[in-house]
Length: 60
Image (cartoon, rainbow, N blue to C red):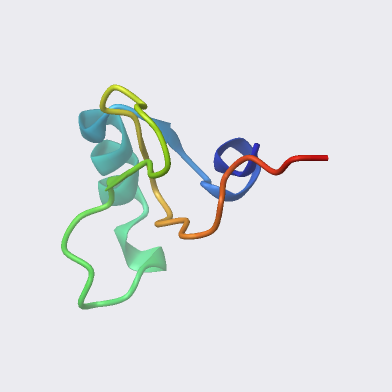
């Protein structure tokens, strides 16, 4: 699942934003927040640090 390998951080919005704040210098100047909601399903509020736009689960 791509969210675990490519998302960098996975958790609640508060948790992801706290990690983003800790490593703020590693991100672009224009980025205002860290948490990006997971797409392609009902993830019940889970967020990742990266905004993955391709399907997170591939069919083998």
